[in-house]
Length: 102
Image (cartoon, rainbow, N blue to C red; front, side):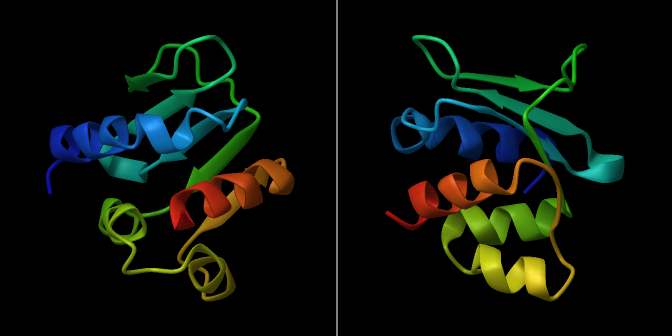
C-alpha cells in the first residue's frame, strides 16, 4: 500500500476507533504521519498534520501499520519485537490495541 491507501485504510476504521476518545499520531518515518483525533464529536484523520500534538505517538513502518490494520500483526508482539515504538500514554496505546482487536 502507498501512503494514501494507508490513510484510507485508517479512515475505514473510523467506526472502530470512534470510542478511542484520545488523539494518536502514527509516525511512519519517511512515509509520513497520520493524526487520528477522536477527542471531539467526530473522528478526524489528518495525513501529515501541521500540528503533530497527540497524546500518544506510535512509530512504525508503513508495512507494519498495514499488518496491524489487517490483523496480521499483534500490537503487543510488534512492541515487544521493537517493530513499534510508543511515546506518550501507554494506556491510550493499549486502548487503541483493544479497539483494533474487536
